[in-house]
Length: 442
Image 1 (cartoon, rainbow, N blue to C red):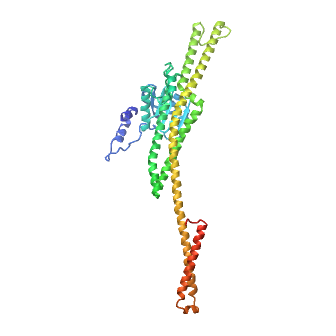
Image 2 (image 1 turned 90 degrees about the vertical axis):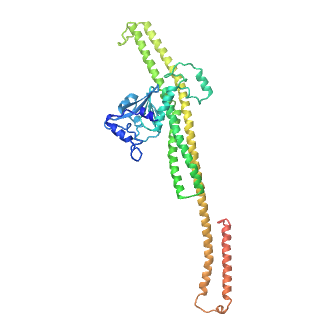
Image 3 (image 1 turned 45 degrees about the horizontal axis):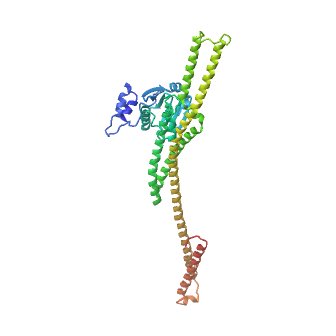
């Protein structure tokens, strides 16, 4: 990975050699002061240049520094599409098909895919470097490994077709360059999101089990942070899934993304016009001057008309057939990663449901404890009422007046017995009433 970084990073300017050396020189504590900072990929002030990694169809990569307007003219893109790739802004995942390019913004992968090259924002992010390495490996090793996971019927249909074209053709034996680059980007994004979902699952389930066994403020705070991360990750996965589903539902957008075919049609149309102009010049006509229908021979006009009709019919039949096949190819490609990202979304949904079930279980436990406290408080209130009867009796006999009962030695004992029996009867009556009204399970 270190060799790849040195190869992909642009050469260090003379004015920044000392700064770069000082930034990568370990300090006394053993740590690098500018570790993880992409100094070469930062936007240069006053120049507007950005460092891009360019990967061509042969798998060769190089570093180029291009400003925004040059990139707009080079890829025929509006400024708002390039703004999606700006690392200073946070935009949701997006895949846009334009006339000459595909703009991809999937998590850390932000690139522009054309029929001849992939332009990727230069960064030291490990996922960006893995994307470049994987794309180079697939471009140099062939495309036979790309569709290993497909069904036997599709492989049989592909193997029955001849090797008519390699790139820029409508033969499904080989994926066009832009689809292969798009596939690597989708794979990198889906793998990154799936790995984050797996890490979240590994952390979540033990924490939730601990919370069910011991409800504490610390565990509740940890679960709250976990749920916040889960919601944010689910939103990102849902956006990628919706983007792929939107592309699969729109045949026009999928046909627009086949850049190699459009480039081949434009070249064939250009060469056809050149050959027709050469045919006219060979007959003694000027290629630059307009041909008058009156001065042209009837045979030449009929020949030009028949050639134009035949060429238009051939191009229309070829474009319609190839568009159908290529839409099918792209649809199968998108469907494979749609299933993968949908599986990741299902994992997150199951985890969220488990968290919701845990919260419901905790709420049930808390409600049960609260009900027990209420029942205990009800019993205490009833007992307090019974004890208050003794206070009332004591208050009555404590008044300052003389009665014959005070002279009887056994009167005090009978007062206590009668008051206690009345208190027990009243307490039992209250308990029976609570049981009758089902206020407590007794």
